[in-house]
Length: 231
Image (tube, rainbow, N blue to C red; front, side, top):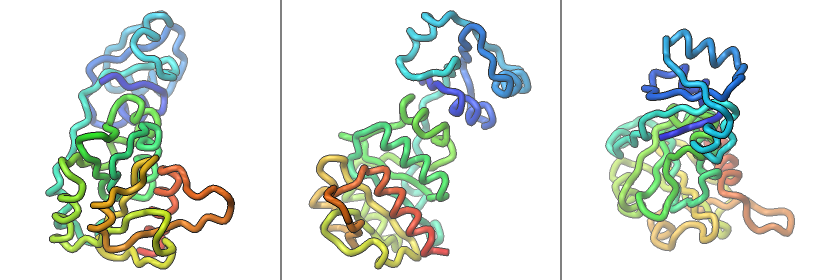
């Protein structure tokens, strides 16, 4: 996988992640990144702008790294976590929303994010960039079926809180204990089967004419409400 951008590069270079190749654009001047590369005794290639642009269409900011594809964690890693807080994305499709949610989850120290295998975002170069390189500091789990996963989590005493327009004010819900917060698809929200398998439906009251929020914004509001209550 090719990932790009200075913040992403700094995060990866500070980690133990295996880096296959490093490409720098001619006249690259970021002293911190160059120092990190040198401190790890890594080799890099200097390429002209047109060669860098062939590798990615993203805003690479003078640096591209080639790394291994993201390795998803198994669902079993969260079964027996004490008082865990996890986020489930019910067929989210926008890569930028996913990256923003990863960044929020890292900031809130959420224990894991669960995504489905089909009709959903996955970890790619855009997600790395949008998350500002925090992907590798968040446990991301990929499952075959969201509804079946919810039923499995209930066996391990997780409370399931789905988000939707028609539900209980999100501030009136108790997020203590093992809790899974579900964020729905950008256009369709949560699926009917997910709604039926949820313990609570959390809604964010709208004061203006807009009747819904961007998925990553809604996720941030509810995640930090949960964190605040759990303190």
